[in-house]
Length: 329
Image 1 (cartoon, rainbow, N blue to C red):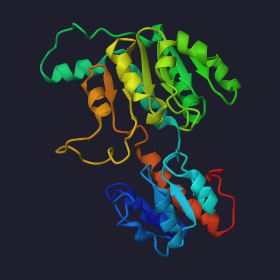
Image 2 (cartoon, one colour):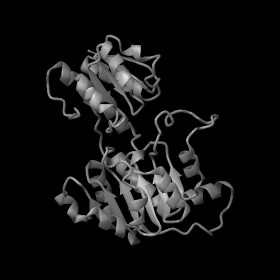
Image 3 (spheres, rainbow, N blue to C red):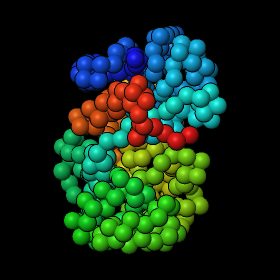
Image 4 (cartoon, rainbow, N blue to C red):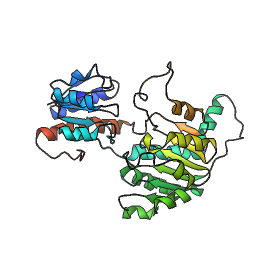
């Protein structure tokens, strides 16, 4: 068995690949480049490819199949970057990665705290030796109602960790209520959560139902001065609606680890380039917006888990065992 790793980082992922390759007796080959028309042939004679969120077209899938690829291994929880219907039609298997939820949950809480305390203003102005107080007054989150949309592993962890801050927590989950979480949060319908939350944090998967779930219509239902936190997927938020409501003050702050159209942008050094992303440029111009480049996941534990899951998925496939990480498509 052999895996072709794309967009593999030499400085952190490569040594882990060597470790798990030896542990599971599965070979690998790698490139630090994202899949493109010039490098797809790397997968020739491999059984699987391992990728991070990136552009994967139907044509790419067809070419991978011609090289003998049977499995697509995502080094991410999400797999919305894949042409799933085409993959299903072609009979390929897809596996995603799972990892402990603490990293993303705590990162979301960090963004909540930073937005509530106007940390962007404090840091930027301090760098210019502006130590005045005007415009820096924040909110205590113990005085806030925080709405958590999605109570899967990450959302549940956010609620549990937030409970120690003394804030009121509202929860919404389309797929049912978690009885244990009722010790910390009140489950409400989505309309109530929009209406009563001072801060809203998103923890749902990206799909056709959640696409642009935060839009002008839903924002209008929210409190004036609401804060929006997103560590899930960029396309949950309509960027144009977000920008419009940041301009008019309906949204007082946003903490965004993800944005729309980030494929091909994040994880590159773009310091000397003109970036063709108008929404990113606009969001960067707001002093009340905190932007981070999709790094909520980025801890040693998480990276190790994502690499190991690629090898473990192929070990299960090789041995004819059930792969608990396989995506049901």
